[in-house]
Amino acid sequence: MYILCNEEPLWMSKYLSVGGHLEYKGSWKKTTLSRLSLCSGNSELEQKARHFDGFNSLFLYRRWYRCFTTLSNYSFDNGHVERKDDLSLDHFHSQYDGKGPVLLGKLAETWPARTKWAIQQLVHDYGEVTFRISQRSPKKIIMKLKDYVSYMELQHDEDPLYIFDDKFGETTPALLEDYRVPHLFQEDLFGVLDYEQRPAFRWLIIGPERSGASWHVDPGLTSAWNTLLCGRKRWALYPPGRVPGGVTVHVSDEDGDVDIETPTSLQWWLDIYPHLAEHEKPLECTQLPGETIFVPSGWWHCVLNLETTVAVTQNFVNQSNFEHVCLDMAPGHCHKGVCRAGLLAVPGKSIRDIENHPPGTMSAWNHNDMTRAEKRLKGSGSGRASNSANQCASFEFSDVHESLENQVFSYDIGFLSQFLEKEKDHYTSVWSPTNPIGQREAREWLRRLWVLKPELRGLIWKGACLAISVDKWYACLEEISACHSLPPPSEDEKLPVGTGWFRL
Image (cartoon, rainbow, N blue to C red; front, side, top):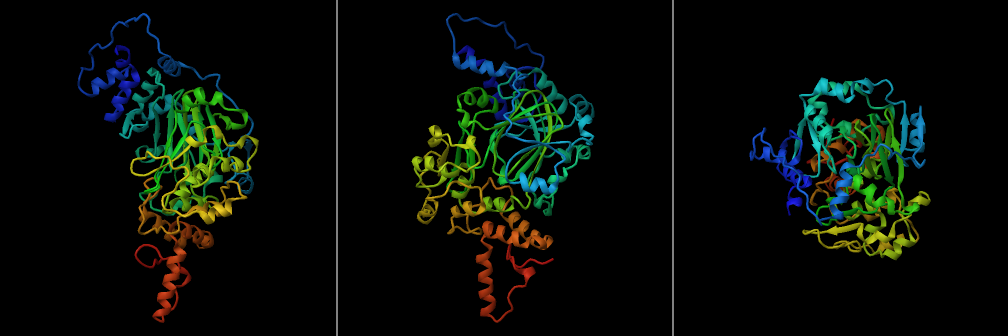
C-alpha cells in the first residue's frame, strides 16, 4: 500500500482532476499537495526511500520501464510513406490528396520558424505566455512556457504532458508571422466562416521524448498537414476503416458521439506493436526537422516523439474531402462507425463476413486483424455498455446488405452514404457533440459556400444533400411555390437553410 500510494501516476491523476494553472514542483506528489494547499512551497516532502524485501510487481516494473526508457534509437521507416520534394499542386491532388500520406520536404525552408522556434529561443521570447496543455483529463490545464520547459527537463512520466494549443494565434500572434500555410494546402472551405464560428484548425505542438498523440482519426474527417521544426517524430498510419490493434471505437446510437479507447502511443509501440504480424503492421515513417507530413481524411494515425519536438499543424477541408466532412455531420451514427471502423460497424455482418471482405484493396499490409475484430467497435446507448457491433438501433439494413454481398469496404462517398439513416432529419435530430461545428454553424457554412463559391455549387449541393438533406427541402419549396403560383427559387436561392432564404 505504501508503494502504491506514493506512485507518481496516482498523484499526477489527482492533480489533473483538479486542473488550472500548473507549476511543476519536481514531483507530482509535491505539485498536487501544493496545489491543494496541503503543504508550503518550501516544505520537504522527500523521504529516504524505503526498501521492502520480497515484493515485486511486473505491472509496476513495466510502468517504470515506460517512464525511463529512451527512444534515441527508435527511429524507423518501412518505406511505404514516400518522401517528395518540389511537388506541384496538380501532382499532389492526383497522387496523394485523399489517397495516402506523404512526407514533403522543402515546404518550410524559408520559414522564420525554422530558427526562431528552437526551445530556448521560444522561452526567451514567450516564456511568460501561458499555453494549453494536452492530457486525458477533461479539466483545462495551462502552463507558462518557461514552467513547461522546466517540467520537460525534470519529468519522468509514462505519458508526458505536451503543449497542444489551438489558441496560440490569439495569445501570441507574432508566431503566425513565422510560418505560412504551404501552397499545397491553402484551400480551406471552412475559411468562409468568421473566425469565432469556425472549428479549431491550427495547433502549436511542443512535447518531450515519450510524449505523443495516441491513435485517432482527425475531427470531422478533415485532412491535416504537420510541419516539424525541431526534433523527430515516429508516425504510424492505417487507412480508413482499419481500426488499429488495441483500439476500440465507441459510437453512441443516441447522438452519434464517437469515442476512442486507446493506449498511449508509447504503450502501443512497446506492448502491442511487437505482437503484430507483418501484414498487420501500419505504414510507418520517422519525420525529420523541416519535413511536412500530409494525413488524408479518415486515416488513423499515432505519433510518438523520439526527442523534444516543436511542430505546427493545421486541419482543413478542401474539394477532395468536402463530401466526407458533410457526411460526417449528417444525423445518425451508423455512417460514422463505418467511416472509422469499416465493415466492423455494419449491423448484421458477422465476423466471417468481414473476413471474406477485408477493408479496401490498399495493399498486402492492409488486411484486417481479425483476431481482435470483436473488440474494435462498440455501439453504445445511455450506458455505453452493450457491444452492438452487429446491431444498429431501429435501422433497416436489408437493402444495404444485399448491395454489400460482393463489395469490399471503400472510403468512396457513394459506398459510405449507403449507411446514412434516411429517416433521421437534420432539423429534428440530436447534433453529435463530436461534429467540428455546431448545427447552426453548419447551415451557415453551407449557405456562405453557396454564395461565395458559385464555381463549386455542384459539389456544395452534393455535400448539402448529405449533411442536411437539402434536396428534400428544395422539393418541398418547389411544391409550395407551384401550389401558390409563385416562381420557383432562383439559382441563388436554391439552398434553403436556416430560417429562410439566404441572400448576398
